[in-house]
Image 1: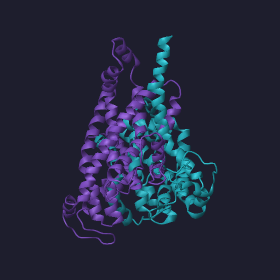
Image 2 (image 1 turned 135 degrees about the horizontal axis):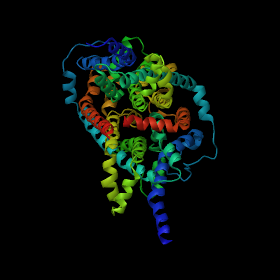
Image 3 (image 1 turned 45 degrees about the vertical axis):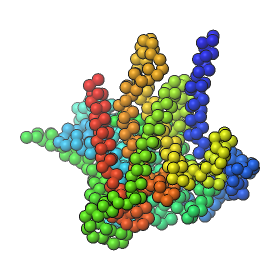
Image 4 (image 1 turned 180 degrees about the horizontal axis):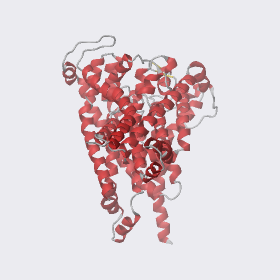
Length: 285
Length: 298
């Protein structure tokens, strides 16, 4: 009995308490974001050392900041832009990635190894290394300040990721599956599209969801390549239109941050398992 | 001589790889070459610029802000990745022992990683606000501070705050991938160690750590690359300030190349990241190859 009680006490001290603290720290900024978004302005700007500073809740929640966000800024437009860009960039990347991954895992051809390595290396190239010359390239293709600038450049970090992930997935699918189809008279291409891709659907879904959130969250390219207010994505729009010099409009900023986070969090909540498998798959190879 | 069947296969491989290689060639390889060329010009926005050799690099070498930036980037990368590894490993080990709530905990723990970094960083910026800081309020009421702390106001405080937010954002990536690695360890190995009389620390150090090392290294190096090349966190929290004391390569490149418009010099700042990244990527390739070789042999 005593041993069990001791074990329970230990479990609390070394497991539940530290994990509880970690999860509170992890989630607190999001909670604070929500509280700030709903807090009326006259309550917001009370210095922290005043006795009436009540940081954790508000007794007079308001929607005025959300109203301001929709009336005074082009938030809805940014939402549509972000969605269109993320969807198209994901579609392009899945298409390119799937085909490339199939070739690299299933076909024998000269230079297959080095090409696979090359694609993996581009996966490790951070956006910040190339954003200035890439901006010049975008300009010489006359794509500056157009959504296409992002739809075509996001695949640079999404294709390597999709390829890498799908290569790992294809390796788990036995080759005999296609051989059977080919014996039955299907061409290689037909076997790929009709047999292998359907079986690989969970992997495709994982890669797609991960790619979608990556494009939704991208900031630097969107900041540098787009300039007019109507073309912005949510992260850039919120930062550039609701911060004027040193003045931060915290209410609408937090409302925008909350609404910009909800769609990805929503998509993510339905596909947590896929997302986690994409993330761990991306590092396992 | 290749048979016609082989050649058909080569042709198919070419067409399947073409879209990916075309996109990557056009928007990665070509800009890379163009970036190197650009860094040798004295271009500013709207003017092509003349060839000036390595003048931009020489100028940066003597630029005190660039020197500070280099130091900052290594401090930021070193401190943040080691903290993320240590905390992430601890969290993974704890979560591995959980019986209930494991899935919900894993799902919510990843939230900082999936939410747009800029947006969550804005929340942190508000939490660090010099006048309305809730962090001050909490620390004061916990008895940890006596006076107001200006979290982003001084060079050292600002650097620590930026590192803290990076750890907050990146730790879940370590925790969840390491947890996935832990779950592949055969429980029988652990039981054998326990029967042999190993205590918790010995079990970790002599069993878990070596078995987990390959995946740990891959995650760690991946995080080193991303942290080293980080932009958003610093851009939002401090903008490189106060007085250019928290710039990283990426934010300084943005300031020089985009905000000030000296494109050639900005390209040179970005490319200054290349030598270090090159070695980390090589190391990463080596680890991944080794991991796959091990898998194939097993």
